[in-house]
Length: 113
Image (cartoon, rainbow, N blue to C red; front, side, top):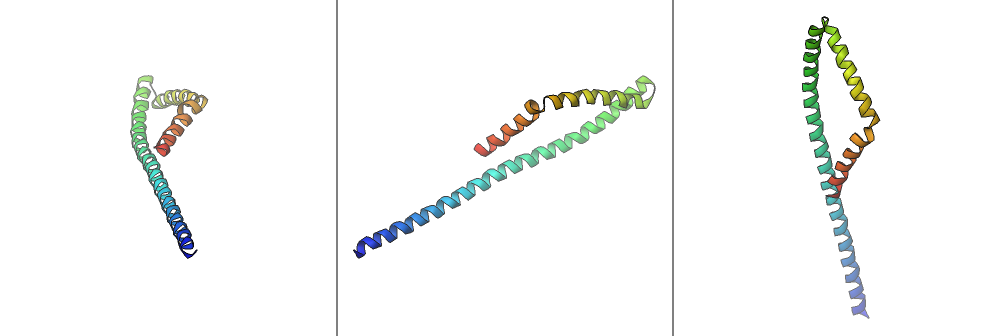
């Protein structure tokens, strides 16, 4: 009888160790996936910021150039504003297909990896 209770105690100890190990593995996998997703997003945010500055400078130059071609400097900026209004409207109309779905897919792929 005593030997049987020793086996049961050993079995419970091993089951407890197994459960603790599984919990630790899950924590580590979650931390790895979270850090992968966050680092990917931060990298993309830095690149977007960098290219935004380039785009702003390019637009200022283009606005001034178009303005000199049209006679008044602010005309060039009005033309660019109209162009970006059209582009913005298109992005708004297709925001789910062009923005939301690709970003969701990237995040899901990173998490499922």
